[in-house]
Length: 314
Image (cartoon, rainbow, N blue to C red; front, top):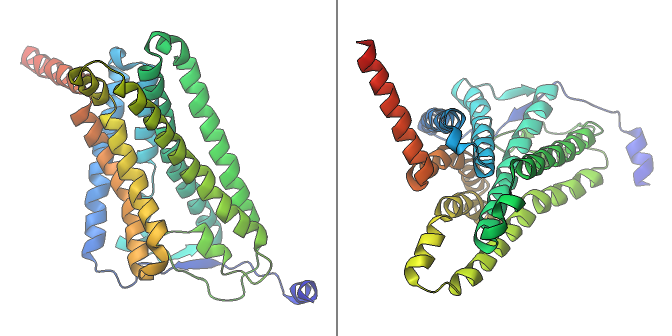
């Protein structure tokens, strides 16, 4: 019976979708997004420039840090500003799917990049004598390349399954961007494959990475417990503080929102999720500059060279 009804439904591909997640949000929130965007661009660009210019930072660890800064630069905020500062709530069908692809790709890569950094810290502390064998440029490049390929293929599947859906009901996406879950729920025909992907994607790009990172820090904690002195433990743990801060900033708000999402107002959930997507790109470079000794030294050295060049020029 259901199959017969679906055959009688005319396939409808809409001209546009309407992003309706922030209709009731005050305008000053968008000004705040603009501020976050500017800080994110300046901070992540600075981190990338420092890593590129300082040959001492051409290590496997900073390959992952550079990739994280690049991913943060390409994250969600620019399109958010276009939608909400300039009232471009109507997004063309193809543009919406493209927007969805890039949003999910970069947000997923943020999560997997933290896994690469976690692997670096795990090997550095558990197998320090084998670190330069187990964490090489080739291994780090291979790991990050694998993550990019995995994410791109998975998100392409998600977008591809959306193109088989017919939309004959509301075209209002109750989110702050072209959200996969909100789009497939608007469809008139069978959306079961999309529902399955909607369940698998968070497991693959949120829960599994978070589980790996938590497990790695449990192992690191066991190793630190065996270290002879408290001073040595503190010194070793200090090398993890930047990465651990990024993990807390990225994962904890998302997990809390998903856990209590059903018990809070939909608008509150949308705002919470939007903040979890814009805060990490802004805070990541600040954390690395403040908590990573190598980057602080490199930044001071580059600024000193620049001042000396100005003096010579005069």
